[in-house]
Image 1 (cartoon, rainbow, N blue to C red):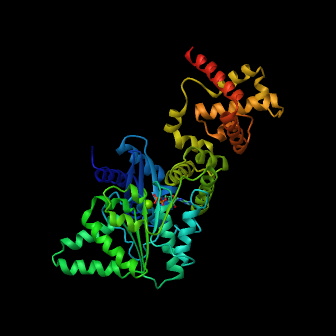
Image 2 (cartoon, helix red, strand yellow):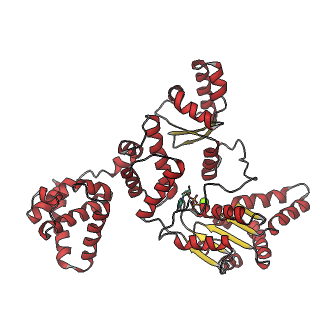
Image 3 (cartoon, rainbow, N blue to C red):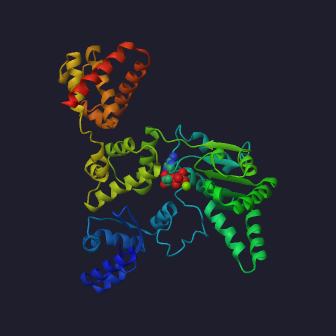
Length: 453
Ligand code: ADP
Ligand code: MG
């Protein structure tokens, strides 16, 4: 496999032959290769926003054909402007490692604010705790320990607190570090020629803060000497009533090889978890994202995406960006279902159930209850058709895992909340009603016979 920068250089060489000298120097040469995701998406950064616009509007075809020539396959190209590049690197790390992003001036991503954080049942407690800490209001939670899976907004919240301090308490000495940065900083000081001085500097830096935020503390588990150092940093700050905020992908008790004394420090304040966002919150997050990024994306696409990606907000946003991008390259004002299908392509294929289809389920339910297809997908509300309809919805959702919005379409364009209500009603009844249990198991039996044929 060729190394990426060699490939990119070949792309540039090719472009140099196809565009004017001026264009090449103005637009192409400054492009930075940021990332190559899944061997499919090439992330590039333009040096200015107007360069990005030029490249996207006037040179995209040339760029894309040079990329295809060199990389060989259908590659998706995404061009970032400088602020998007910083955001990308903040989120994904600098894959190229060719230069450290300069975050020392303002370590906080301006987009990660409280205002941009969508609050729902899954995160309302953690949000409240973070706001309380930021506002210095009420009880001080110290330390505040936040945990939850990847992409659920932990880093966003730390930055939101940081941005808040910057605006309302600018004199506070606030530091945000990832656990890795803290560890590297410490280890570097140990390895310095004038070690004592360097360690002293390290300690002065970390122990004179008003607020210390450490992101992804779980990585400390394998670093014994860093644990030791962090323990002392922690104590020093804590004893001086300085705020400490920590995030982790798991609760303190599940961080293996964490020294007991640190574990007990972590649990001495407030521990708050972030859960996966519910459907409504996911939809709200996507809408917010469209607003922030000025994406124009149809409502049904938003719901479609929110239905399919449930456990990671970063993936939700990534999919939205992809869909926006696909609409952009085909010069559409607004992204619709066509782009959504394309963006999901591989994933949708897998979901198609080979044996049973939604039609099979509807047919089987119809013949079981002796009603017509028109009845079941139609509007009639009498119990003899409404109940079979709900059962069909339930089974389609359970067996095929088709998103509620798509099921709504099958049933004459019903709203996804109606579909959700039907599904939930049947699953509730299944818990207590023998009659319902009988219906479902008999229909499933009929379906499995059909499937075997
Ligand atoms: P984590 O640190 O938990 O892995 P991040 O804070 O990096 O997750 O969040 C991933 C992405 O999802 C970020 O772009 C963030 O802005 C976004 N995000 C997560 N939760 C929310 C939310 N509740 N509202 C708005 N955006 C969110
Ligand atoms: Mg994070």
